[in-house]
Length: 390
Image (cartoon, rainbow, N blue to C red; front, side):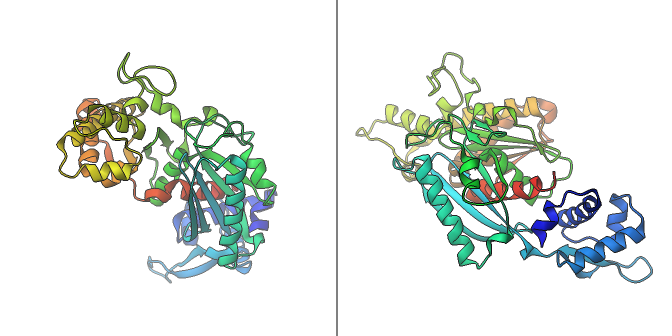
């Protein structure tokens, strides 16, 4: 069983885990690939591969190109030997993803957070949905390898606590021992990280970046960013990816929710955009409640589009500053306005490129996220798999 194999930390099993991890990383790999990356005798490698195959953890999956002799057998991991759960907890919704060990989506549950969704109510509903997912797909609990949580920060990852996040509708989202709450329901490892970090991990993993640096920016009711340097997330201090939203872009500018003036959130968050449009509207006073309402008003309304592009301008300035400091090779933008307003998206990119340091301008790729709203939950599940090899 895969769970027992991964839990075995003996020195004898470490090399086997390295072989398994290499097969998983490459998708399909031959013994030649193993020998090129792992320094072990060929006889030892042959024995290990045989043992992994006999235990049903890997299997032959076709043959590679011949270099003169017989084509080499290619091995892949057996996908349904283990499953991982990824959970995104944002200010507005919860997304739960069930993946097999090859990171293929098996099932998903999602629900909106309201004023009644205190931590206890929310976690109880998540636990219920996890059990429903396992039952729907006939997955026994002993095949569940672990649970990953991508949440709004700041966090204390070591203690598994959501500390004091901004913007939840319900009361009680302070000092939430979320890891303990999940471990009391499921006897599996639970990994806590910021949703921006897990979303970045998912994008990085699915695009198979090699030794690249990636900045992942989420815009919504706040601004959150994750940065991956050669496969390793660099946001560790207090787990607060939301701090990017408090970059000062307009000294003594608009008042932010944090009490300071000129923060990025005060110009780019949904609430900031809503407020700006409401204050300058020449129409009958109205109050925007959702981004869908805003998108609907954009049709044939140049005044509202102008205010939206003003927000995109400030966002582009902030991204240019991040690029100038972090030097990523790729910037991935995620958020409803990014996906659904092409004018907004293009303006963010235009301003970013206009203000980034000139030598970086042609070396940075800025694009939309490819996994959409599922990225943070998928990345949280991937984090579980990575964590089991440390």
